[in-house]
Image (cartoon, rainbow over all chains, first blue to last red; front, side, top):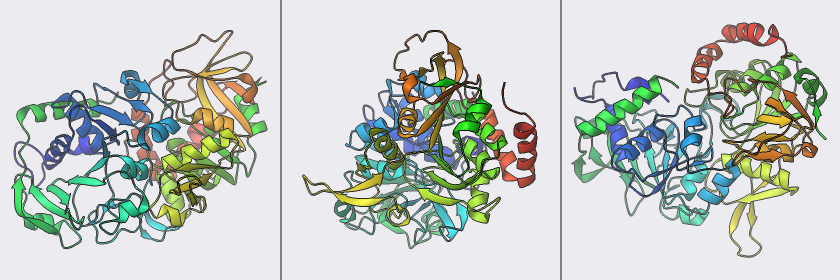
Length: 268
Length: 272
């Protein structure tokens, strides 16, 4: 993913001290608590999870779908099967084992996912956009581990940049389930986890409404406005009555994040 | 007993036009050299099976070897899209590519069923996703004991599975370790198998956490040092991340890809 490549760019909604991507990554990292187990995808989720482990959550257990459980990399891996993950893991298991023994029974506290498209119920599309399934305008990578991560982790955190192209009124393909079409769908489908607890974007934080499951803007990052968030959302965005302001990145978070991103840029 | 063969002879004998072929390796131990030999020998109409069809399948698809793809995630890990895969799906170049799409858990369990000699596997997944409607090899099943509704996926039984491993002895016993993905299951599920190895040794020294494939479940072993490049073989090489980044530019353009194919695969010839 390109998080490392874009962090040095200065964008319109960015303060002088940090970029919107840095704010998003820091906000995502803060969602992860010490002593919990986190199923990590590559890209922004991996960056945020490693930031959390290097700052407030040294005992965070990182689980990668390549079978690396308890990985403690000292640099960001480019891929989920990077050798540094296997070298530093508590256990390296087969792929059938990581999905069947570790993910499916609900042993993982948090699933950390990205998205190409996301709807108001936090359902995710990573399969295709435009055209038809057989002849799509854009063919995306597909499901990978995400459907089972979304179904089986106790809760899910989604990290995704917010834009009308991403935050769409209707998904063209449901690859991974958030809340379906509202309350009761997850239970009806037998999905064991509670579903998406929070969506972190470059503009703010969205959380599902407890009664309707619809994503609601509950916090704005410094410099971002409700109007900006509405303009970046393809549906009529619900906004909490009292929108909080996200605590800006502190010096330690920024220092560690930049050092981590430098390890990815340097390659390995 | 596995036969020790050259890569060229092994591919010629074991991989046939129209076969269902699995090249497995989860980021680690991906059998790139064998994939290139399949391209050089001009195999056609293959059903390619792989959880993560990354760069080696981008190359096979671009070279026109594949008619169908059975997979769960098609991207260049950490870099972006697979442009040859996308060109085939979006524009039918160099030919149309039929997709059979699963999740990782579904694919892993399909191999497990194949390796177990069972007709299908069961998992708690897929429900609520559009994959259920799109993929014929995903079906609901009711637990006969609890009544819970679950998902069944049929066994995968490739005609031939190809994997790369760290080493084998001269009898063809194979040892691999590190991130072992679904390699063991994919070999045991297949009718025939080829293992390319970094090293051939007289006697295998046990390694903590390793997987041993005994000679009698492997069809052929080929000594191909560096045969996983640009992926890696733990203990022998590191992943060439720069090569994965470079592939992005080569694969975006049909002419650049064709030039790469001519120079780096077709003209290069098989390893000795």
